[in-house]
Image (cartoon, rainbow over all chains, first blue to last red; front, side):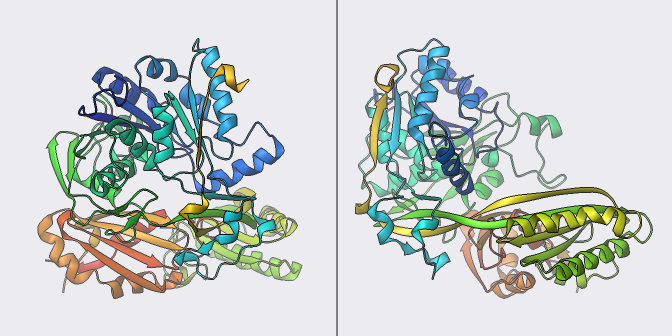
Length: 469
Length: 105
């Protein structure tokens, strides 16, 4: 049933991807469940991280037809024909730095699949490089004092809201492709198109945004990123984990929200999984800022209505912010990393000596940058760069320790040289080192800014094989 | 006085934005929420993350969700794009919090 044909009908929104590295086969069971429901539905695919977008912008400079999510067609191929046949639009931010090129690629896939009449909506206007909006940025509170040098900017994108997505759907788009927009907008857009909520109906917008927030990370609400054996278990153990069902939200015209997942899939939806995701990446729970509404979850209650069916009530909305968040990506220098393992008696002492040796080498070579040593197996991810926790646990002596050097520098050559020094430990380091791996990463730094809403002009267009040629 | 790790009473999830970390802490049982409110204070959480350069902690109380949200500033050593840490997002830090020892009952 097409969106909006009966605005009183329950709307189902499924999410088939929660980030750029997510399982490629996840959308299939969600699409099947939406189709089987027979009611109005939409499928969202969230694939765009901050770093992903900067990398895409770099790719576009090399390749004018590139710069969108590399896995986009792999995600769409198994589901596109059956979603189109069932009037279930697919909404994705997989356009990344080049939504128009992504749309053309999707039309190419459509032709291959025997869907020559497919209509693809494109949302643009998030990319503010070269516009006067760049002149009007104010640092976000977390990045106070940040100064922007425009010639350094790799990517600069504003988080757009749900309205352009809804507009593309009203124009008949069967696939909507955006660049940067708020993740919950991928769900709220179809709700606006279906229910016709007013853009100042803050409580309904808040409920829809809450649903979108619960959906946006895919399986993180259905038992992914959740299991803690013996404490929080997933039915079916590893098989359950390997077949996690991705989420579906059932939204009522009054803004009611229920989270579930396709029958027969792994995972779990319960109070605990939903609470963890509700608060994920929130700061002030009374003021979660999105382009469409300010969401307050402090009055939310969570009820387990049936197995894997959880109801949320009590989302409140406040008027949307006047300024929108923009993420600006800048060159971030280079990171050289290397690791080497030591096992058996005295392993920690040998690894410690290897670490001190590396720091001496960096000093003697005069490499400029910042370094850090970890002893994986003793302490690593919890420690600070100075190794304070490691120093506080001198008696920990595991017999399998992996030494890691990390070295950040503005110089690629220095980062490469530092990583190479780990390799040199094979012959020049302490006894019994093995298993060296090293790599050098081109880093991207991101800063957040605020932009006055009126500086932006989101654009919506509808592409078909005929007009995109 | 005997203690138990917070892990026995609560579960947690970490999220990052820049150099700021949020830790959602959720009591397994609603009746343990007041104990967590008494013991897992802003100052204790700040002390737990001091070695990483944390400068402040704000605790938001969510009794209706039997939860808290802790927002910790400057704890990610530059965040995902700048940190030297293997885990630049700080995703593992939910379990650093869950290792905190608190008085039993």
